[in-house]
Length: 96
Image 1 (cartoon, one colour):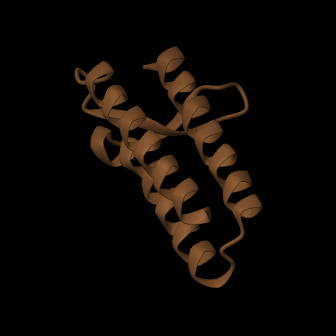
Image 2 (tube, one colour):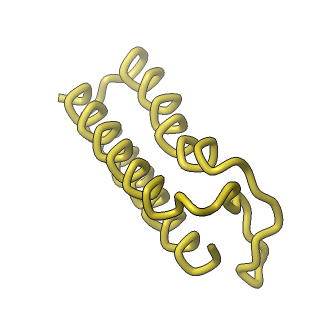
């Protein structure tokens, strides 16, 4: 069950990243960090910036599935990662 949650999360995050790729296609770089005033402090190439969250999800889920294949832990990780990606894309929409 935890593996199914991980695969579904990675698939959803990939779809969100591809959608954002089309949305921000006219930007060569995207902000990667925001200050307390919500202004970008530094950026990265667009594809790297958008691939970061799905890559982070992979880095979280692999050890989770190997060492502690708990469906509850996978669900918490999934909600947190998807929420973080959606929030990041929201910030991109406001600043890019």
